[in-house]
Length: 269
Ligand code: DGL
Image 1 (spheres, helix red, strand yellow):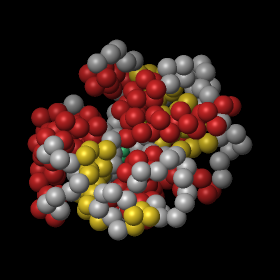
Image 2: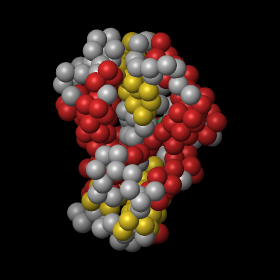
Image 3: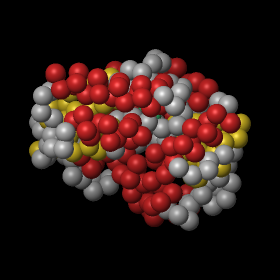
């Protein structure tokens, strides 16, 4: 069955887009919990419960493998779901690790001890819940030493994108980059630690300046998914894909079509 891509809303489309380009023969089932977005202002328990119930719905729709294409859900729910035990034959993966492996110059799944890496000053842009979880710093500490991370909780950006108000989203991104630069004037790298933010990547890059390397998750997650599917061919998605939302399918389809610049039709989850 199709590989599931989950997000609180539209952000996971940035992962879906890259995954479809990288794996054109795989069918994907996208699930956006748009009725309950944004997750990034909720507490960890709430995010866990919402993620668990959406993923259960995706399993019921036939997905065996679900990617949490949402950093907020990955931070609050992934480990807990995996440790709590998954139904037989079902798997759930997150989006942090491929990004951190790229930042720390590692091959996928390289679990060797932490070591010094090229970048020393990293700016992290993420939702308030992801920043509060410190999950990014925890995963980074397993792989790298001596990296200084300054995190900026980007309140309001996800709401603006979900509402299609890109002028507001742009203004908010610029003000969050300014706030980050006051704390860390010269980051060498910036992590877009929310899957909505690649929709604003150009604004982040402009505001940060050309010397800052911006990491976003789409292609990194797509490459690591390709590697995973090669190692687990039984998870290869065929048939049963589509786009599902808990929100208003017409409205969500319009936004998705605008972002991906191709016709996307959501149906009610
Ligand atoms: N795309 C989600 C993420 O990567 C957005 C979370 C939200 O709904 O606030 O964190």
